[in-house]
Length: 310
Ligand code: PMP
Figure 1 (cartoon, rainbow, N blue to C red):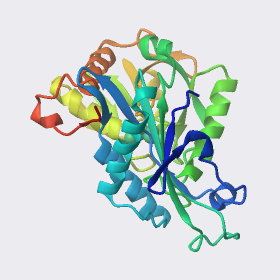
Figure 2 (figure 1 turned 30 degrees about the vertical axis):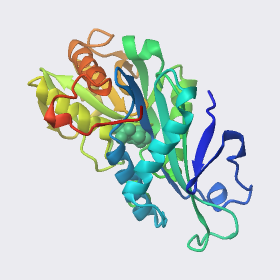
Figure 3 (figure 1 turned 90 degrees about the vertical axis):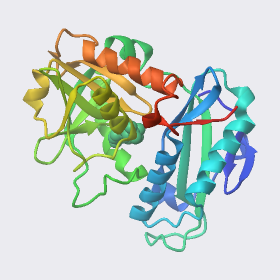
């Protein structure tokens, strides 16, 4: 990974190499932490964080769900992001990924976590296409996982919880081992839920369809994509999708902060549509690109979506 100069930790900027933690940190053993994935884009008006407020708000909601007492307010978290990006600005020549994490540090052992110290860090580094440049342009191969999405009776998918990603990680491992690029997880009923780190959309008869949030994260990119689709005059349905409906979709794509809008060209070795990036997918990618690179600044609907750093 490409290192930058500073990491923000508990209110201070420290050198990247000094941002370490004790091996007996509570989270390392019992897995309770909340995190975010946020992006900043290079625009003609300089570096800008995309939907900073929504990401910080979701981080605080995750903390609430996980009973982590984050000591920072929404405004303090936003300011910390800005402070960090300004401090590291000279390190960035391309788009940036930002990773805030609220975790439990050193001092208490045993499952009970409430007396463990809460630590907050924010790191930022330059990071390109999560599923590869070829994936963004030509689509990726997806494998339905043998793992069901985390069951809602035992875990809480509205939290972006570190522990939830064991499920994602095993699914991703399996997908890669099968020669695919990404995993698709079904819920316990066998309905399409989401990717290991993305939401899914399909296109049928010029309508966009995306599953509801029963088993999935409340995705910021999914919400953004729905607005962009409406701008294009497309009908958007939030309803359940079955696996075979996905196989016969005209187009399919993943959305996520890291993945952005990534076309799906194959699922379980079924070719989707014409086997590349579909026309509606490409149109949405173009709209998304315009939005994150500041070309929709004049549109009041998107006011405040970009927080400029420079
Ligand atoms: N689902 C999961 C499991 C994810 O990890 C992500 C990435 N944060 C998403 C969906 C997409 O969410 P967002 O668009 O807010 O990044």
